[in-house]
Length: 290
Image 1 (cartoon, one colour):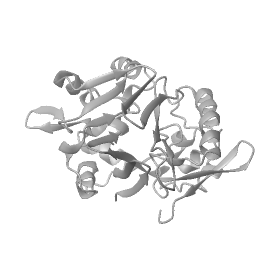
Image 2 (spheres, helix red, strand yellow):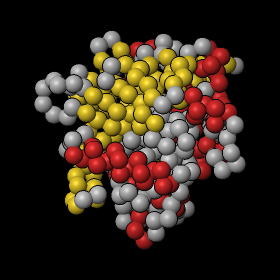
Image 3 (cartoon, one colour):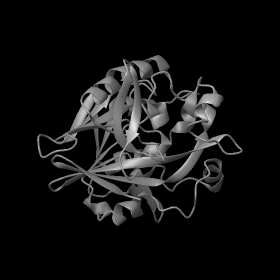
């Protein structure tokens, strides 16, 4: 289901790639199950409900997409492990339901290259893998591409070269180092912790009208509203202390300046604001209707 909000000159639309599940212990690391299960109820295999919320940003004749979900290149065993629903409305159709065509996307900005963030970068057409968004330039962090091409034993399963190598073959990739601004008002900013080169996306709609002016797409820095507390860090994170440091840096600013916050893996309240209950302790407040 798509949801739309105006952020100054930027029109934001949330589209997702359907529900899936991951192990709750992996998603919450050292946080005891007796605590995290109050927020995310696990199934009989200890998996919690998740989704991959992607963001369409429209500005004039430009249409940018942040992340591209899981995609459709995975086999039945993979889909079963993640409890994926074969009947779910997937990202391409959700984009169409939001009133756009895949050809309308002019920029794709990837926060990182884990399989659940870049799966619809490409799609199978006959015997070839081609860009899903044929008129788009795909923006990726150079360091993340280098690591994805030579991952370590711990995170090798998170990468699938089918999601990016055909884009290089098609000549539609633009690499960046510490940050990028694909369109005015949208900035990728490195926030390592989950891995060495993951980015969050900061949005600024300018001084236009009321409501939110700035927003943050947290990617896997704060994947769900349950991960807002600083020490609630995923077991997947390669550098958890860096994750905590970036949460302290960015969440405090987001709360103080009343940013719209977008949580990529949140099923119930994917966007809202942060409220500081006491110094250094924040909680998420969902938007009306979420």
